[in-house]
Length: 381
Image (cartoon, rainbow, N blue to C red; front, top):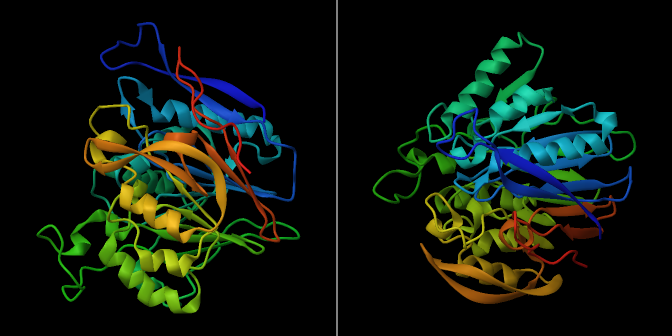
């Protein structure tokens, strides 16, 4: 597999605009074969955070805008480099996203909103409607920008109580992509939860709905027989409610799982894995070698227990890879992974190519830092 290396740059902390810019990342973009009959899911390497680009034959959807910002990495620069390279290849899309979806207003999910709105065209937007949180600035900026468009851009705040059909909620804003032949389908299964004091369970000394993670927009996307699930940072109490609502209908049965909450101990349950029966799963998290605040190292992502849970629940194999997995915050241990588990921490950007009949191929780009080598296997079966 060939790759295209795109240099991302940003001002280092403390630098004035007149200072020399320093490289912070080399966005390694897989050189993908020209195909007009695939759904490509790009899990973009944004360090500790999330940005997933869905490429369809006739359009594109971006879920969250990542990611990590510290003295050695700027996820917004990396996201821009990747999206610029994508639109340079897909000139037919004219720099347009059919949908920008924000799962919840935390900074590792909303940091790049301003970039996306300034640099690319956005036709529709959804979020959970909240206006507080560490990443509220980005989500509120999106909401205000939509208002400024005076009806030219579709917008919907996804509320859990609006999902009355357990198969999911959809409309022309949530699912604006219309392709000839195989038409993708996008549905919302979860969103902002009304502050119901009867909601089950209490964690960390507060009711679950006081935790912004539990308001995450959950999306199911499908293309023919292939399907995937985004759960944002949904945690255990909300996951159990989601299972009770959508599990019996089969709406959670998917092929690809974007591992919840970056592989946190509270973001995936065995019952959820059993309901999904995924063929493969992808963690979006940073490398544990970066020992700074707000990093995978600080949080212990992905957690050893979650990796083991998915190793046991996924039958598909990958080329074995030796990785570091979290035991707890700031503590990691070595583990060999041979199930079809991928991670931006191990593999750099991961691209899943899905055909309408459900067949899938995974391409991993690897990671390179200035002066360093490429990490991660160049491709996977």
